[in-house]
Image 1 (spheres, helix red, strand yellow):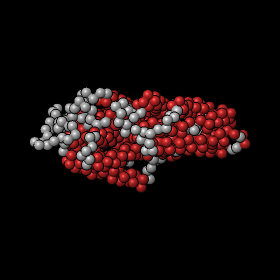
Image 2 (cartoon, chains in turn green, yellow, red):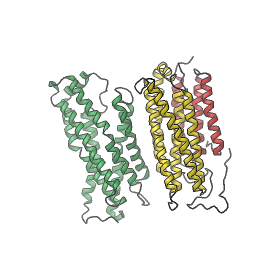
Image 3 (spheres, each protein chain N blue to C red):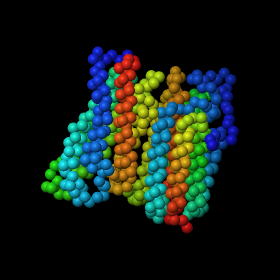
Image 4 (cartoon, each protein chain N blue to C red):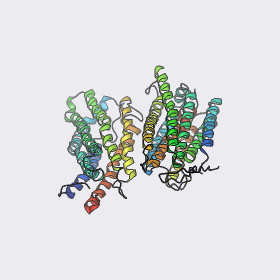
Amino acid sequence: MVQLTTDNSYGTWKFCAWNGMIFMAVFMIFWGGLGHNIPPYAGDLPASAIADYFRDNRNMVRLGMVISMTFAVSYAVWGISIGKVMDHILGRDHILTNLQVWGAGLTVVPILVSSSFWLTGAYRPEALPDEILQLMYDMAWLLIDLAYSVTSVQMIALGFGCLRDNRAQPFFPKWVCWYSIWVGFMFVAECLMPFFKSGAFSRQGVLNFWIEFVIFFIYAPIITWYLLKAINRIQRGEGA
Amino acid sequence: MTDTVTAPRPGQEARDGTSGNTTGDHARLPGDEGVWFFIVADMCMFAVFFLLFMVGQAEDPDAYRESRAKLVPAIGLVNTLILITSGWFMARAVNAARAGEWHIARRRIIYALLVGSCFGVLKIYEYSTKIAAGITIQTSEFFTYYFAFTGIHFLHFLIGIGVLLVCLGKLRQAENPHRLKWIESAGNYWHMVDLLWMILFPMIYLAGGWK
Amino acid sequence: MTLRINENVALALLALLSLGSFVLVEEDIMSLAASLAAFAIGLLKINLVFGSFMHLGWRHRPWRQVLTVWLAVVAVILATGLAVLPWE
């Protein structure tokens, strides 16, 4: 039986759980839409094309990245709410729970930092040479793609941790746990991204953008769905 | 097509709920359902790889055919035979486990590991000869896909080796009620590694023509 | 159809089929028929593995059905990909 404090603040806990959806909505609309990152500009485009992106869309990119940076922390908040459910599965202070929480927390870092690169490019693009703007853009994408392993740690820890749920009806069904493990593992294909400026493995490619980002975009809603159900069950006394 | 029923030997007890029936005709899904989800997801990803390769080949068949001619299909064939044999040992290991013959199951997993490891050795040899000849992942689109797809497959193979090693440990635990599911799931994953190669081999090494 | 046979027979069949696909294509490397046959053999081998090694039967819903759809989709991808190539 997990010893919890008497004030479990279920309302706050559920709000933290909803941060997963807040993060994804902000990420898609502001980072992806306003930031023109869905899809990214091709790696084999000339510097002038990237410079034009920053110069022609500076305010949209600024707004997109400001909101993206503000809400990046939502991913960590979400991870903490997942961790509290994992406490009910694994007992308090289990190593897999710690890994999940830390993985979610560290995921905030590349999102924050890469967004700052896009923001910097849009801050005074008229004063910078095309190649510098291209550099900012490349830096942003290289960071956000190659920092995948911190998120993989979260996903794999979540998956293996929640597989240990011995309830007749586990908080997270097996397929969700294995989906989490699979997505975390699939990110390793991003290792090929720096070697290609065109084709399936480039930052704009079928594999390293469309498939990798789609499986990530649907990850948070799936986890959040079962997370909220779990919190409700715990609130009803099914947490033991 | 016949099913061969191997009854448990007299006095043999299956300690973990197995019926002693070693055929595939179980109502129960072999292995863990969650692992099946992982297997299907991975196979779908490889189907995308196959699509990418065939589309790329259709767009530039001459380049693909010239690149294919630089491979040695016999290596691919030997690797196919290695994985098939390793898979056979694994299937027989599962049969032994279902009959409660855990020590035999462990032995067969070891054989599966020993034979399977040869795939890794040959793959590394093949990669190194290519690289020594100046052929890398950036040489051409064919070789991008060759290194990437066989490389990702190789990663799955390495994970499979790890899974089988862990499985060996799990089978020692007589008190573990899940060890049958463990070996079945490990076996299913290992067979997935095998069957993906059954497409990769003809797709990369054989079919489509050479120049 | 589930191809479920004794594992020893399955092993022999799988090995023969593998050799067969290799020889077929080596004999006539620019033959569409040989390439198609190589893929067909690969898919047949996979079906054998489903039944005889993985012991996955039609009662194991939805997994066997899903994998059959996978086989069909892959077959279409491979066959179409070969058919659109220029052959001698």
